[in-house]
Image (cartoon, rainbow, N blue to C red; front, side, top):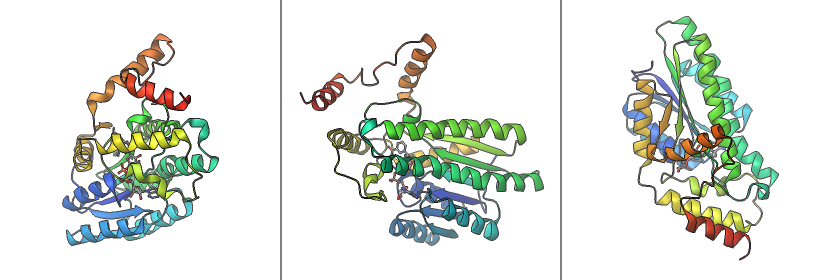
Length: 299
Ligand SMILES: NC(=O)c1ccc[n+]([C@@H]2O[C@H](COP(=O)([O-])OP(=O)(O)OC[C@H]3O[C@@H](n4cnc5c(N)ncnc54)[C@H](O)[C@@H]3O)[C@@H](O)[C@H]2O)c1
């Protein structure tokens, strides 16, 4: 189990903002060497200089996690400079909303490219390196943390593309845990499932590589709801980052920012086990459901 972080290497994608920035701050405070990646160069450089001022060494990669060649070049550079990383946070992600059939195919590619393939690239490139380090040294320990979401465990309406991407990350991460368990005890895995936390996630649309077409009514409503939910979140990104390191130290798999919100997961599982049609996730917020229905049915 990875319990001693000083002098070890942490890779953090999406390091320019939100959870990634806070994870970088905790990692620097814990004496780690940092590998920081983000598609927003200015925010990335700001994070790097802040952590360097705090005394951490940092390698910086301005890239999109959806770009397999760029991710491969980063992994190679890390291996050459510092060897296998001990802690990998596949964290970069983008938020989107709207009725599931209204997302453009470019939009699907963008969201799945970042939220799913970004994590796939991190797992594909770093796990073999970590396994090799573990094979060479029986005292070597590593840990991989993938960021999914509560939206990876339930399916709120009007944000289906995001839900799909995060359910896939949950599946990938549970599979990774089981597969690694077959071959080693030296590499742990955790799955971070935040609920709404104030970060830059509601402003993701500006990061789309292709110019988005004019938003539909459902996308506008979804964006407004996401803005409100994210901004009114009471748990901070710094608290989630601190909790995440604690979970790594304890070898815990699931990391929740809002464990009190897990009732919706139980309800979904109960529906599945009972063979019931899925309960409306907005059943306990009838005003929101009625407002959405009225607006989307043109009422
Ligand atoms: N904040 C929440 O309420 C919440 C809830 C559940 C899950 N999450 C997840 O947490 C993770 C981190 O998001 P956050 O909330 O800190 O938001 P954020 O927007 O503050 O940070 C995300 C970072 O990822 C970067 N990024 C976006 N696209 C990228 C790409 N193609 N390549 C590299 N970097 C890219 C952004 O530039 C940004 O710096 C995401 O995976 C998100 O889906 C957030």
